[in-house]
Length: 136
Image (cartoon, rainbow, N blue to C red; front, side):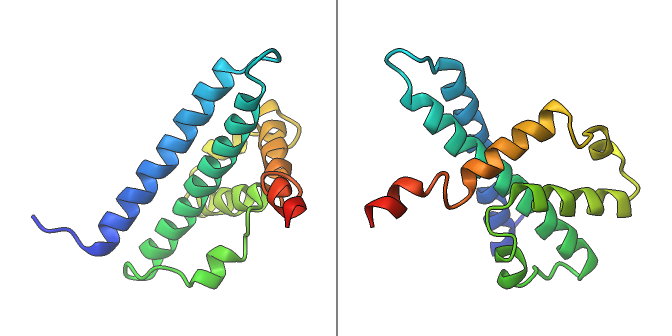
């Protein structure tokens, strides 16, 4: 069975998101305030990227499901930038539209949303790109 190029791109993106989340959690588990402080930065970096990619994939797949497998424009996805909260809210809307209430369990001040907010602030230009921005 032959798969389309889009299939392989979605597969690669899913594998990358999975690897980012797994690597981030592993780095966080190994991090400590002694000689492995850098693992905190690595963990937050990987987790923010992993969540961003998962949420963007959900939005892309929803668009494709609603538009005869046509992907959304790059400007639509790029418009979210690295804003994990906006991405989560958009994904939550998709779920509600499809009658899925699984994301409703995450109340605004719940620990998972607070963690997502932390990663969102980390992913902002003052966060995961701050070193590069300051160097340039």
